[in-house]
Image 1 (cartoon, rainbow, N blue to C red):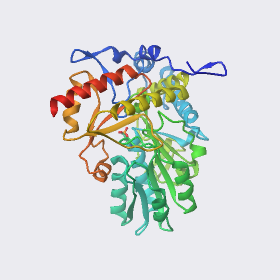
Image 2: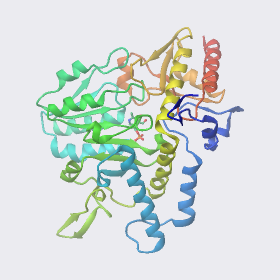
Image 3: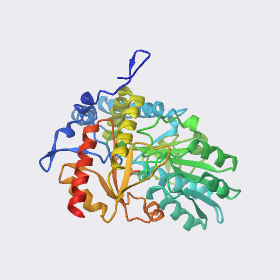
Image 4: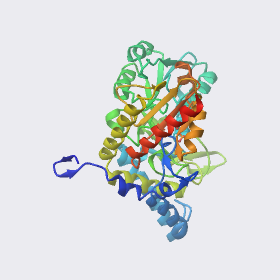
Length: 414
Ligand SMILES: Cc1ncc(COP(=O)(O)O)c(C=O)c1O
């Protein structure tokens, strides 16, 4: 066991597993091995309890009520905002906008900042390894505004070609929107450096933090991104909640996203005075229950220790990579020097989906396909990959099961 300064730094995985009830279930008569964490992570009991507790004891609409239940629900909802602020080190709670998820966060920026600031001939830069949710909103905006979408190429190892990025930046670049960690390859992009370069060119930067926020320490002030979006459900929290961080001055200058209740101060038929931040961007009744339970997930991660979790996940990644590399005909996609805990691979002459089905027959859940990153698949001339992605509750024994299941599946399919 590694110890530093008297602090136990090794994760107690057995104790952690006991807190995720779903890990006790069987699939096709086998104990579940869940390696689809990059799609969504499983939920600890504290998150499930927070949901049940809200609906059992203080279900009420927020902000508007003066009765006890409404006050309790409002306090719990707003407490999540404070916890998120701390989790990503934003400078103020007004910079934390609750959304449905990463996708909505990016769409919000495209529809507000984008519509206001992008003009014909302007350029937006994204990368080859983006998730569709960080491609399509910009394509739609470019189409509408007659702007130009430029794409940073990626090398054979799955690393962005920063010299090419530098060449793409110029006086016409208005926005760079880049993924922090690729969901298809696991690459950690050098966003700090990329942001500095973009700012020097006068561009605003949006970072897609859907995959990074669960694995890396996020400090939006240090990173100096202008916008940062992520989802609760990849962070052991409920589905249907996400966060858009934006620098206050930018959020204040942007037009509203959706109109309705909550986002106003005063409405007359002569006009509307919009609410202050962050409520200006939160129209209608939000996802109260899931937002409240999201705090339980963040507290759980913080109490467990992000550093400890990361070490454990890094060990799993290294172990899985070493084992997979020994399987004849198997090729790992994404060999970046900086990676988080997922491994994507293809096997000669076998369709990824066939492998996925045979692994599922053994209770092993992996993701197969293009991972909502089709341009990335096109770059590597493959239809898709098998992706195993690891979380704090996964073990080396489970990776052994994956390896043995894969070997048997390959034997069956070839
Ligand atoms: C890199 C990346 N960006 C964006 C998204 C979209 O997240 P959501 O579906 O939670 O909005 C995902 C989801 O897989 C992702 O991996």
